[in-house]
Image (cartoon, rainbow, N blue to C red; front, side, top):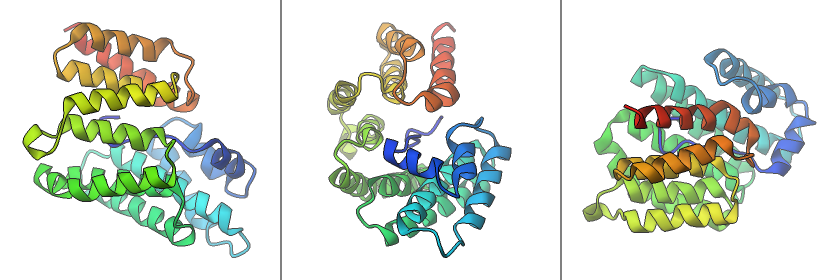
Length: 244
C-alpha cells in the first residue's frame, strides 16, 4: 500500500481463533479475500453485526474489533476522496480503541489504532501528520512494550525515521538499522523487504532497491496472504519504477 503506516498482519494465535469463531466469515474477507472495497465493506458489515452478539467471549470480541480496525484501514487506503479516507481511518481507530478497552495489553489493537491514526493524519494534510509524530512515536513504543516481537510496529519506527528530516528527529541510519533488525527477527517478512526497497529507492540506491524488491517477489513469505495481495504487487510496482 502507499501509506508508510500500513501494515497488514495478525498474530498466528489471533488468526486461528477468529477462523474458528462466529466471526470467521468476516475475518476471511479481510485476511484471505481480494483487497477490494466490496469485500472490505462486506467484512465490516459482518463484523459490526457479529460483534453485537452478547455471548461472544471477550477474547473473540477483542480479536474481532482488532480485525475490524484492520478492515477499516485497508478500506481507507482504497478510497480516493480525503473525506472518505478520514472517515474510514477514524472508524478504524475507534474499533481498535474499543478492543483496547476490553484488553489494554493487546499489541495488535494498539498497532492498528496507531496505523489508523497516522493514516487519518496523512489524509488531513502533511502539517497535521507532522504534528502527530510525537504521539505516534509514543504509541508505537507502547505497542512494542506490549509485544516486542511485533514486526510491523518495529517497521513503522523505521519508516517514520526515514520520512522525517533530521531536524525533526528523523535518521536514515537508524531507519536502515531498524529494517535490518526486523528482517533478522523474521527473514521472510516481505512487508519489510518492500519497505526496505522503497527506502533505498528514495535514497537513490537503485541496485539495493532492485535487490530488495526482487527478494520480496521470490521469498516464501511469513505472511503469505499479505504477500499475495499487497507485497507482491508493491514489489512489481517498484521494479517498474526502476525501469523508467
